[in-house]
Length: 213
Image (cartoon, rainbow, N blue to C red; front, top):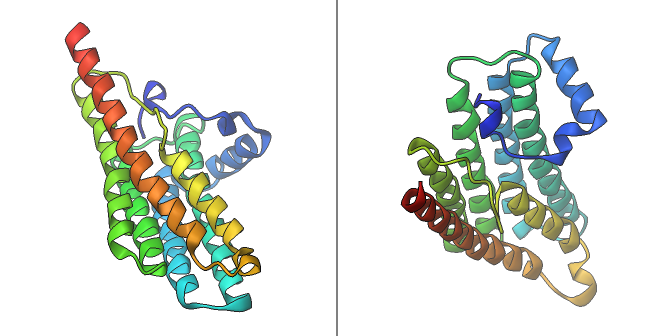
């Protein structure tokens, strides 16, 4: 895993349930890297649920949408706990930095591509995934050349997951106004454009840092 100075600032890290969960996991044979790998499984299930929801109707659509929302949050919980078990639990490993970053990029692609296929707009899904990966690349590029880790938004990882999770839950009610996938389409556009803005913002901050250091 990365060092404390490179960790995303998260208020949830200080909650009682997160601390209790990380202590319990640290006392088991589960490793931080395995938790990171589990985040990819959760993302694959979320993307698959979004895909299936696109062609489902009625109660089945509701089930798939809520499953997608739940697995998106499970992905975030894995992202939270892997670092806590590694750092606070003292179970970091030499290959931790790889498993800290690589699964996140895979997860973004799986979720947004699955959502794009679900709403019949795969190109938009891959565009959102590409922009999400670009935000992370910009942050990592800054770290490689000595800049502080930049986790700024407006569409950082937690913001992307909050948007698609909220859209999935709200989409359950779309049949009440004869809508279908409108909220999910809006959310995916929000991720694509917001992540592009985030990458540009991080890039501009990085250039300013390099010019003034």
